[in-house]
Length: 234
Image (cartoon, rainbow, N blue to C red; front, side):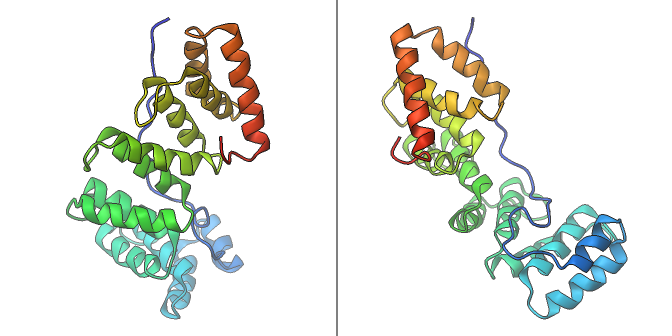
């Protein structure tokens, strides 16, 4: 069987109102938004945003990004994301990273994108952690640096982020940023596969074809121990 890796695109926009943010949407706003009553939700978000509520600022940005209840306007979305991100809203910082990296609604600026991804990562945003790893792995807008990529993938893996687990296994398979080690590669693929990720399951099988039964048994034992240790020190 030839070696074939699943595609791992850099994550897209954070579109959920609460996935990345640290303060919940008020029940009234959330209810109105979920019902598709965007005008009511927008009005409530505006009232909260004017009082400095970062989550409301983030959600106004979301509405301008999507064109929900307002004309789609990426530059206005960026304005609201920036206000929210400066107050520590991880979702807003992540979306700014996406927009500056891709040049969506703003002039492409990798340095600014990295700054926002790093800000979101420091707030615990795992999509940002993974994206930073992937950028360094591929040399996407930054000098290719496999060791730096592994650093970020390991941070994500320690939080059970499937794509980070998968890419850590890939790093050990190819010896990129770490010494090539099929046992550790299989271990990380094994852990990633517990989420049902098809790419990890396939990679696990491909790696196993290059290993002895004893090596496979060792990798599975290490995977169980790693999960038991909550991915620390694996």
